Length: 346
Image (cartoon, rainbow, N blue to C red):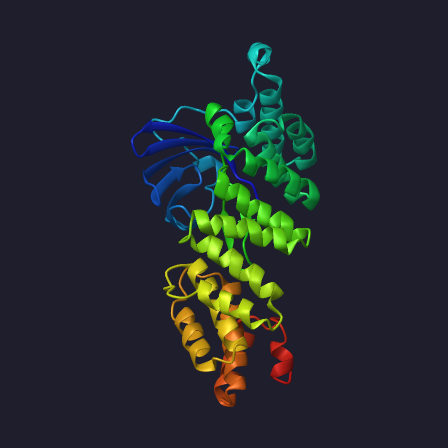
């Protein structure tokens, strides 16, 4: 699980200074849309507030400038490494509660990339909601699903205090959590983030009933959250195995969804799959075609999955020439995808 750790300082309304391991940058804008400028260049970011989903595009067309051309942004003071920002200092440690010391030490090891050392520290901060939340994420990253599930369940129980310790020390965490094979969402230290991570832990433990229960709780809290809908569709689809009642639930989760983002398109993929499994082929074809109409800003893996599903459907409907054309196009883009080469006789 990729982690991004930074310190955010609000300078003025709509303007923040971001301090990370890579240096400093300034963000200007509102929630859901902002422009960031730093030594790595300028980047525009647009997202769906409340979902953790965002798209980011570099505006200056490249990566870092060569060292000889780098200049500090005007008006920005030189800033120390984020590791220094996470060092409480000798005197401050004398008055900092032991669990908060362990929490900061765990955060520092996450930044350094030593997740095992981070988990050792964070186990000593389990009575802090943020400590046990971060411990669960690190355990998940280390593929210890049992410890992750136990920690994240504690974080859910103490969810009203989530985010308090991060805010106290001016820290922000941006872990990216896989929702499906094609979609990743960014979560935060709150009830939604803890429940989504708990779902992932339960799935890795093969406890699908517990995962479904956590998702149903999220749906009751946020019925319109498309990330939650997608996660539930993926979980139900994995266990459907011809169960028509479950297939109808999967199809219903994508009902009325417009193709507004990658996560919406992924939800349409599951709706199309469910409709096809229910024998509603014309409806399935309409859904998959609508999902493929927009390809900009869509992950390649998602587009491949949609195209493959439509090819199989066209073949079932007797449209063999159209199905082959679809498979040939997919082969040109991703020759190793699924069994495309075999279906083309190659």
